[in-house]
Length: 445
Length: 182
Image (cartoon, rainbow over the protein chains, first blue to last red):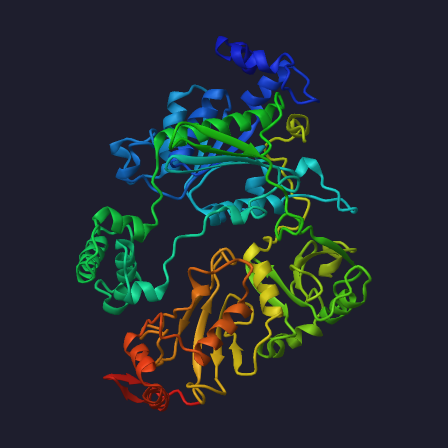
């Protein structure tokens, strides 16, 4: 009853205009209905990854749009330097969890909103956690975190026996990114459109300088800081610990030594800020860019959740260094993408208590679908990697040879287990999925 | 284009029962390193050591050059392949003290493909060949050990003697080198 009242509230008048009648940009299969607003208000579950510059904006945008069930995950704590743009945080919050403070703020401010914070690393959450969401929106500052989320969502995809994707297993990923006055927003339908891994070469490589230049012929202030970071720190080890970019004492030491070096080579411009930037690889943040990109991402989440409009297809770049410029293009799915084109091949195993690893390898060599030559096999058991057999490296071959005459059960391989197979006959590793014909209960006896 | 709303209406809390096994899926790094290791094609002067065969991301490479300045030496490199591989290069350190223009006393190695020229298409094999090449053709133009580079440019005979002295163990230019004869 309360939900009915809620959706009839005056504040949703504008949403009802786009959700309760068709429009020229509606999805071809869009069926206008009051149920859609109810879905947004009561059912739809969103995950925001990152509670930093983009995350704060995203959370505010989505909560005010009507999404009630929002989870937000971030492992970081609030730093004084965040306060200029991460507007859900105040001076008193410095040192506390970003996710928790952001969730508290929005829960207090927006009636009925239930933001659930998770103060941990994204890697600590299991597939069940990610599976519960309808859409995931990312405001991250690292490529490896993006790749991890992307890999997770691809791993949740289900395929039928003809390798046809089950669309209900797709969790769309809306990813935003900013750097100074530049930003981008993209929509990824895992398994259907270009994923993070397909377009990995779009990310600029991290700036690195040749080690020999740093060591002998520095020309830039950055070279001097790199030298202290790479060479002098480990040599002198002033505090007996690895360099910590968040430790003011460490930075002061690096600044001092880098300045000395700069003087030696007549190089200008080693400032404390530069030292901080080089040591921590800081990406400058501009509040307005974050606002624009988060706005685009929130709109995409809304479009995906309601189908009231076709979503962004699929990559938008934004630049407001000189005037304002945006451009949208379709990033293409890579046919040999190691992540999203690598559909696990189901292999039916009659009896895993009889089938030995060497039988599986023989199968891979003889089966017309694989016809492998000299496959190497690895897998993951309880989150740890395990080498089953690698024929080409003598030391590993000798240590893994006993596995050949063990059965799949003895090796700890369970039903649904994914095996990574590398062989010269394929350009990338192939993933096998073991499908046991007999049930778990029988296996244990 | 998928129509999410119709697909997801039925999906609610707690109904997310997994249909497949829950072994964590292989990371892109693991997929690549399995491939790289399985197809490692080492020259006969090189050998690998895997302290833990289940961990293909941590290993050592031993190079025993059979020609050039460094003939008869035995040089150990440690490889650490991170979760961002192959977007980022493996971290390689030289564990043997070596008198070499492109390797310093801390074991840092100045090889372009390990830093500024790394590309994801390169493999562990490319790095192995790059390191092997460093021993055949030390490059004095881009030195990390300036003193060694200067000797190499000015007098190749003295450089060769210095290298052999360092390999047998002893002082070169005031720095003590541990014996690393094959």
